[in-house]
Amino acid sequence: MLESFAGYEVYNLLNDAATIAIIPGRIQAENYSKMHGVQTENTNDIGGGLNVGYIDNYDWMQYDVNAKQGGTFQLAFRVASLSQSGQITLTSSLSGALARVNLPITGGWQNWQTVFTEVQLQEGQQALNLIAATGGFNINWLEFTLLTDVPEPMDQSFSFQLHQNYPNPFNHATIYQL
Ligand SMILES: [Ca+2]
Image (cartoon, rainbow, N blue to C red; front, side, top):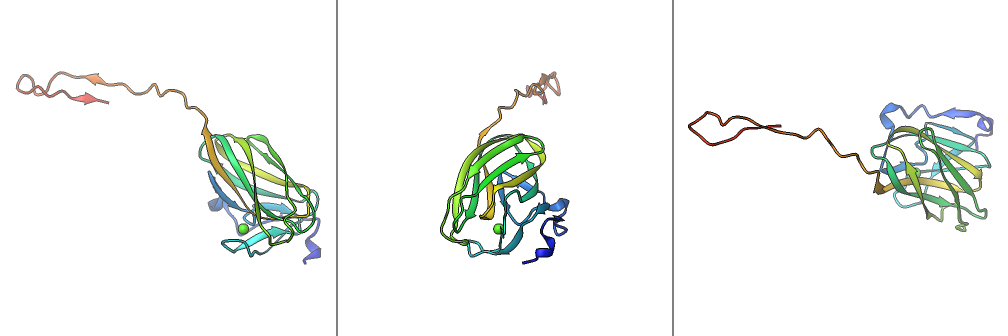
């Protein structure tokens, strides 16, 4: 454990603008752009890779995302906890407060369960802040699945004009100009 980093805000220099996560989609917890107080470790969950752990109260991770659509999303958190019921609050720089979720005790740091909630997200690029209101859990990923689109306004731009038959008068074809 890298005690010397505890209490410092850490930037993940492995991530740049090219790794902005797309929503709908899955965000690996370890792909934060910034964090405070957490560490990554190998995970035994399905798919392998890394999970985020060593999460204490008020530690946080920030994710740069781009929501391709606005609307209501199912939000899943893939979490594990040995003996403590954690709590996540999630906020967005664009959409405001998104969710406050109580997490289960799964009986082991690598006993993974998926917890679901629903959130409203606005379309566009935004930063998500995942705050451990109560720590004591591991997280492998979070995933946004679109449930309901925001209704789009009717597109008024579609119109067409009828032109004179061409070449007139030898054929009856009509050109549609869109
Ligand atoms: Ca992961």
